[in-house]
Length: 98
Image 1: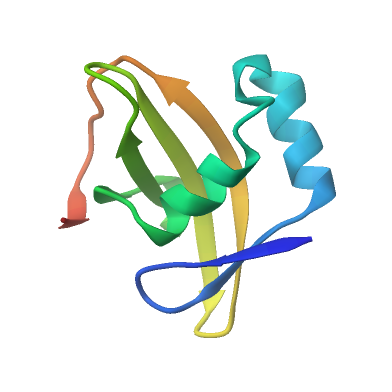
Image 2: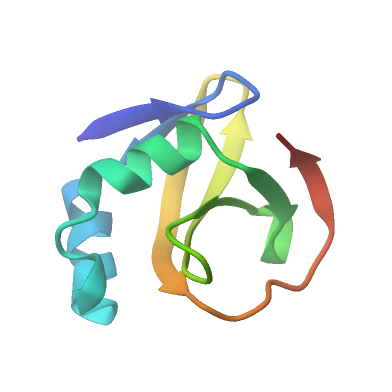
């Protein structure tokens, strides 16, 4: 298991099980393990996600973005839900931006 710290200082776990789920559903993420952790720690934008989750976003080129969806359960625990690349315009409430 690997851990990245969110902008709120919460350790966000990325377990082997979650990573396997991400890669099985988004095969273009296969070589992006460290990019997922980096996006949590160094996002350009943090958006509100579904059911109290957060979305950390980093640009990867002109149009492409990596989005990491995670949940902060407490001040000392959180976990990655999923991660994916998108070229679509992101919709939702921006909570923080660099």
